[in-house]
Length: 473
Image 1 (spheres, helix red, strand yellow):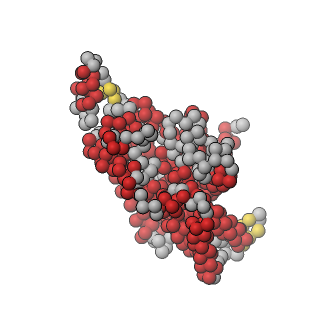
Image 2: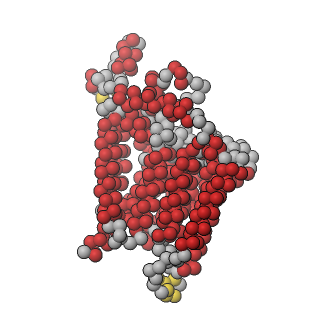
């Protein structure tokens, strides 16, 4: 195959699709001992190399800030792996206990990196290859193909939902559970953890709502998109109940509201051509009759209520109202996590090191036969492992995000359909970040790749609104 064919717009899009299929089937778990990561991560590096090889510089211009952020995070991890002289290392917060152990054992203090678990930090560094590859492949897409990126993600999320259906109706330890350590008997789909499946399904409901209201070349295709989207959402709702995830259930409610909003206010069809035929332009929406959408919304709510009452496996509903939330491990961990955050400031313990350093602080009353490999609060874990540099990186991201969002707010009335794409991206990213308060979804490669593409889509959509605003003036 010639270099020209490999770098064609179509080839770049197919590379994007192949990569995401690979990520969804091999990157559904956050554990670093998952064997499929031995396939995924080297191939992610390969796709990064491909993206750089076929890179079109003008496509990347002005769109690279999200990539810069991930690059800065990678650089911070590299810095954490640089060996430090013993006099400097022992003065770092939280290191005295290790220095005392070496002194008691009669071992000379060696040069050690800032990270208290260098192998885990190296693993964290390699894990960034997946979102970086996702960003690079997306940045290489032409404008026409960028519009297909989110639909590709929706299809793969729907495939995960289909897996969940067969998992639930099949044997509790059947072959469709693709990870050895997983929630057997629950509809985890292509994931190892039911919470991650539920969070992604709730997020996909928003993406489907946006897709249902997005532009189509004619009325027929708009109707097909609309009814297919509604049918898919009605399948997702009971699946979220079945997973037994409180986070998924809590996020599903605003997800449905936003999906209805974007379906109602989005323009379903526009002027254009399809197979050489022209279509008349129209500024009206496909479903001008509000009663139709009202009926659909009521039926959706009734479906949710029926699912919660009739499905005997509605574990999420039971767990949400069982009254034991305050006694769960996540709540009991909070004082310990805050202590660790304070102890390791300002430099952090090293990315990925939480599993090991937690053993130093683990309260006696929380000792049990299982072990804690993540903090189940990614916001605090990020600060524990990254310290002040990680905090500064977060501040930069939030300032950038606020400035970009303000552009949309100012131009909301005069902007085109891109504003709904911005709203969709903000909602989905917010769902994932909110779920990170009590979990760690963004440590899962497939969810991290989705988040990476959405933040790039958000940036592109804001730029489109900004250009339209400038043209109007």
